Image (cartoon, rainbow, N blue to C red; front, side):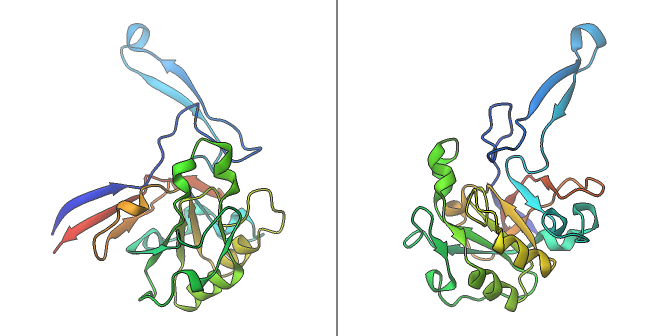
Length: 216
């Protein structure tokens, strides 16, 4: 097996990264330095939902699985890009009619391409399209248990219902938000990895999300 190409789907985390309204901004603090200690070590403080990250069911569901309790297999699988750019305007609720029939099944990772990552870092980013409950159920009915989107949330920013989050969490599905470069995944059957840091008991964690073009 050989990896011919890797598309990085991850936003770089820095103290200046855009965060969801109300979330803590990251801070990077030198803990040890080459001059004083002979090595460098940085203390990093940030929220579990910073940058490109995954939500565990515990994020919205009492008793839902924490991020460290979700099997690694859920985060790795064949990616299927669902391009909804033609019909996903500001604030739109995306339904399955926007991507039509496609071959999705258990173990696949659905990657919803809205095109909104181009606005990352601006106020317009939070006027993003989101997933309808119908879209979530359509994916769940096909056995999909990992869903990613190139927007800050699968629900409208500022909304209190978090309907998409709840439907997915009830099914034990994980959500990956703040993806980027989905339009560059232009090869068949990409191998996608959304593996998070397994923080004990946490509601989510940052990821280094990638899509790989693999030659068997």
